[in-house]
Length: 180
Image (spheres, helix red, strand yellow):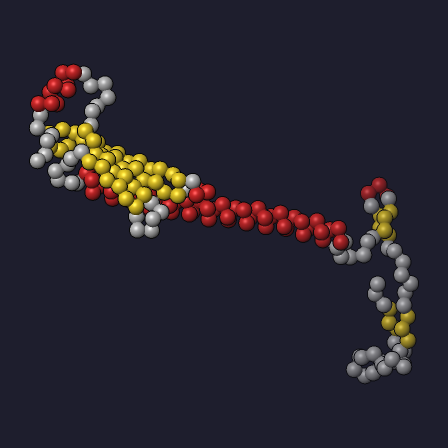
């Protein structure tokens, strides 16, 4: 509570006189009251936060911080998974382009891993047979010097939680029937 100072003497500068010349009077500490709604009076509390209020605020801040850490951790995991997916897609596209550009195109299979060993790939070239093809179409196709080949690339790469994921790309290319 504020102290009331009564000064007997002051110097010419407006400063209080030395303690021996000043008398200090204190007001007695009493609870102030205020009137609330419906004329009820209540005592005001001293200013500041109670321990309970501080603990509740601390818990709220801790919960918000935990949620933010989980959010950022999940975002980093998703970014890592997207990076692995992108690398696997690039490997599959390049292997598919290499296999489909081979001259002459033949039935074959090939496989391997990338330099870091995290991505494994397998390329398979097989004759393409359209679904629900009738016998007349098959005889006509057999007489042609070219045929359709299905080129498939399977890529295995690590996913979330180290579980392997597989990406498959397939295309159809035209090639000689029986290359020498």
